Image 1: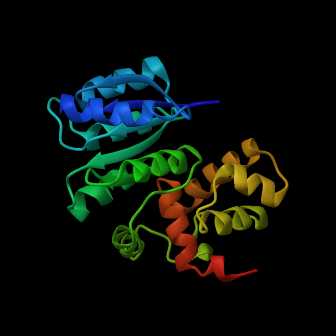
Image 2: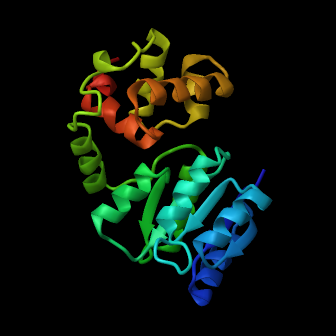
Length: 217
């Protein structure tokens, strides 16, 4: 089935350009568009896209606030930030608020298509410098420094899932590798986030890498 995508950007010409790129591929179905964060929240609720492509700097409500509000709705939508803003602080905050990744607007059309595919499959689109900032955040007192410091201990299966998250695997890939259903994977991921007090799978993946879990066979 085609990946359902919504596009939010206050620059009309750029927004139409992104939509045109997506519509050039039969892999995508554009289900809606908006020009600010406030409209983005309503758009997600009414169209239920698989992926929301959204800018950060917009009138009425910016992309960070929209990301936070959409994340609180607990809808099955992946958010890909597409922006000119290269400041690490803003991009890092977007990930913390629930975005699955980001790209800079100078990216090639093929890179955008690949990123949308990756995000739709549950994979993170995060540059190395942002991953380092996430690692730094784990050194703060309110974050667990090791798996053993989790509020509740992770089960053996949850550690296996966490290890797979560290490789960037999607839920579908994890289900195949561990011979379990995708729904079971989603449940394990939710438990892992709760126990480690982290907000999304990007942070979970970075945590797994830092813990050295991905180096184990």
